[in-house]
Amino acid sequence: MPDTTMQKRLEVAIAATRKAGRKTLDWFGDANLTVTRKGDQSPVTAADLAAEEILKSELLDAFPDDSFLGEETGSHQGGSEFEWVVDPIDGTKSFIHGVPLFATLVACRKNGKGIVGVIYIPALNEIAYAAVGQGAWYQQDGHEPIPAHVSKQTTLSESLLCSSDFRDFRRRPAKLDKNTSGKDTRDVIEDACRIVRTWGDGYGYLLVATGRAEAMCDPMLNAWDAAAVAVVVGEAGGTFTDWQGIHTIDGGDGLATNGSVHNDLLRLLAPAAIRSK
Image (cartoon, rainbow, N blue to C red; front, top):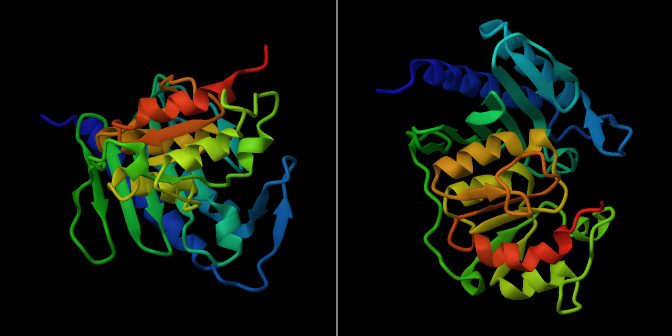
């Protein structure tokens, strides 16, 4: 029997994600869009703020005792064992340049463990969602939902690898930049894979979950970037870990794959994953 509590949370999450994501389109492609910089120099717009306000309102109206963590508005501590983790626009740089590969991400965690995840690409009207134990589902504009499955490719040499920004491989603070071969880790994994593309952020993880890419690799990642995609990729049959191979969204980096090529990529990434002590 499906978990009715989880199912309700998934339904609310899908509706809230769609509503917030559609709101971002009010600003998408606007040549007069104002972009400001946060303390970490990442961009933020009125669309980010408006979408997060919708998510916070919709989710906490439905579940007022839950906690909430958003990229733009920070944390709200509730009294229940549940926490919502959201990113209103994952891929703001794509958004402000009129590139439709940005995502709205919503996850629900229970006692720190992800149970629900939604990845929505508003400009393409593509959505993937999942609840733990219920599989992952994918819906494209105007079509019925279908099961989402990762690819069956087993070799890196025939794999498509995505990343949000390959320059971030060199920006990782206090982490080794060279593979044991002496090459930059970025160059090593590019050489190992058939195709590499910066179809990144939430969209890259959607590609993995729907079998269109074998791997999505982020050298720098926040919890709100990872929470939803970890659930969706996992329920689609794939694997999400940090670069140490730990199943966590708090490691500061992330690797999502179809599972079959995961260990091969970890072996290439491991030298660059040494943490400062």
